[in-house]
Image (cartoon, rainbow, N blue to C red; front, side, top):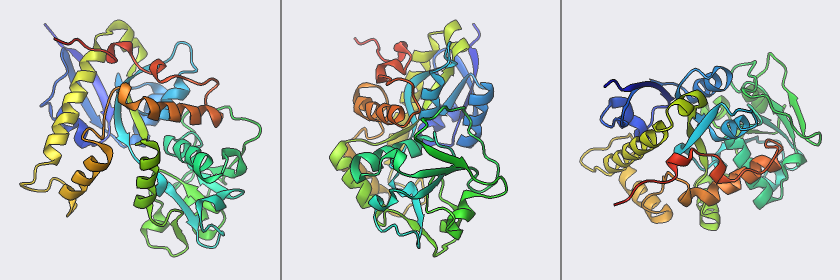
Length: 330
């Protein structure tokens, strides 16, 4: 009997490598794994729904729930998780000595709806007294002019948001002091180049992120995996099959990462850093599923709604294929 042929567009991750290499195979499915930059995957999936299965920004996925019928159904698989305090940069002469000083400033962001920026706006509001509507936002290309929002967004009138000139980039505007700060998932080129005019808002990112986790228990979720709606409607069994395989691939990555015979990545203290992460965040610190991530998802969905991106407040249970939320036991 032939297996279902599906294309899976995803980044280059240790937690999905077994799927790409074929050492883990979903029941009844042959996957063609397309290793693509996340921006390309998200743009092509949101604009043209090109892939049967894809990694997708959590924010973009929640935005897609406004459509009827919805174009995708998600699995509780989190291909990207990341603390994002390190995603805030500022110009050294902008008068920003602490996160609280961002209030009233001009903050660049490639797209208002980016998941990393939703998280940081929420954290700034909750912990530092910087409500999302207390600043001005400027959107556009970070390193290349002309970036547009991948998903149309209707935003509250109270929000001050504008496009930067079509021939400019956020990176150069930050370096020149034309914007005060930048919230972005990717490190801006002036910072990479060591430009003294640009620095991080949080000088000790790791300490700030550890304090945040100690206070909240949240390891932010950035991306989920989605199945195109037409595929799911025809073959609802693929949700459980893919979820099981992705769990197995992640578990293989856990085992391989703790192999001390030779370093798998070019980090000299990889093993002690892994042991520290487990001590702080728990053995299954990159957990999939709903139950162990309920509070994290609830917090993100609140931020998404508060910031004008969701018409209503979604519940975590509403995000995922029901087949992926329970399994048989013996």
